[in-house]
Length: 432
Image (cartoon, rainbow, N blue to C red; front, top):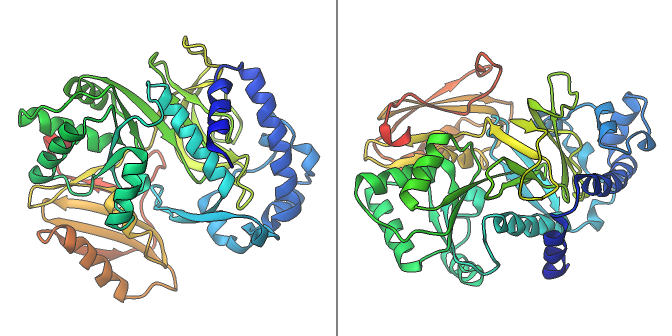
């Protein structure tokens, strides 16, 4: 795998017509469908149950013949999702924390992961980024912040000309230090969780702290509300470019300076937006469904991302041939407030449950400044001692929080049927 030829090919590819993109997608769709049918027991059984053969799924429209699969289905049929020759495939393992309330471990083939990185750099390029430009991350573990030992992290940062700041602890002391780092490092771009950047921007404004304006800011991992975009753009005095991506399903989309929507990438995956029956829609709001095109280590075919998106039939004035995702919904995670005055990103709890086995679903509720209620739906493998493990991890983040556990049979959804794994009842202006 050679990065630069792939990257240059992707740069050239963005100017193709949608018809050309679709033809290339369908060519690779045939390959991944054939592979899944012949090598992955789950999909062979699925095709048989619906009276289908691989040759029945050759176009994007043909995907409607297949049912949508969920995280729960994958977890319940874990062994059946292993390709028969998995030992011949080079891959890495990863996990989602379960913003839908259901954690998921999965595999990514090395080429799929490599392609993901090249597409990411191209997507930043829509906002003016060039390889080697200085960048500061303000995020958590989903953007690889805080995962590696200090020496490894520093070496990685130097090699990629970036610095990583944690969104897990955002008290006055930390945010003052973040401002110092930005003014010292002078990055061309910032990238981070929408809520973290919004919180940081609000703090800078309230404390009259100035930072060196970057050329642009990339928001990711959760919904960017208009008020957030406005605040971030005003305080940092630059354009804000929203991005969307899921490593497990492989779907990605990036905003360009036209700000008419997010360009849906076609080279690594197929993104469908479907109605309640699973039928594809060409315009309007629906559920985002993903089909990975190169993840032979664990093919995701019509995978329910649990995110909702609004698809438009308009084409962007920039000239790129990709379809546009006008808006992404259902990606927002609340900021929690500690009695010590720190802002803790809700993803902090999400990562705790990456490491905890035997938990089907969870929900974290901040009832008051000093009281956190964690609702758990355990399975038979769950151990009582895990409660104290979780309590201790939370205590290290805030000694002022009292943590209560509620073991429940199920966790209530909203009236629209959606799940919110972080709920905050704190009315704090800095998180608005």
